[in-house]
Length: 223
Image 1 (spheres, one colour):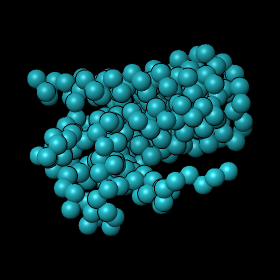
Image 2 (cartoon, rainbow, N blue to C red):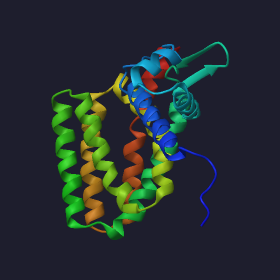
Image 3 (cartoon, rainbow, N blue to C red):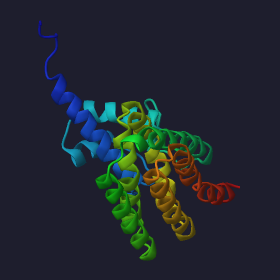
């Protein structure tokens, strides 16, 4: 077929995606704090790429609710907004519910083992008050069913909303909520291994709605 017009589109796309992930991760882990100004020149120096992919990345981050921009004035890291985070939580809960429902018929013994190992690491991180380790293990646990669902729309939506939720978990991580999640993970594994897709899906949704305790605390601080 004819080669489409344009040059360097793949390289530019990769640069934009790399910039997006780097800035997103720095916002989520608190390296870039809520309210901090994002200056193009500083980002260019940090990432070692041109302004164009950085600006494209910032536009995507604004759509994801992680950045706020006033054209010609400033770009800042978005404050943690409880309303937006509740909305993201609702969407994430439904997406994980759907992922589990679609994954259960195809899950293998190796995937159950991966879920169990991830939950063991999650429980250990909770005991050690290791927020970074807990979030990584939690991501690994849920990734099993997201991958097994083989539904690219679920993954795309979760990539949009999960960073907003992880900011709240990192900033206000609750060991009590974490211990509850360990038990819910165990329940999800058991129901999945029993082939009970419906109850496993409901348990997955309930697991993500446990963030309500964190959001309630954040809402009280805003008052």
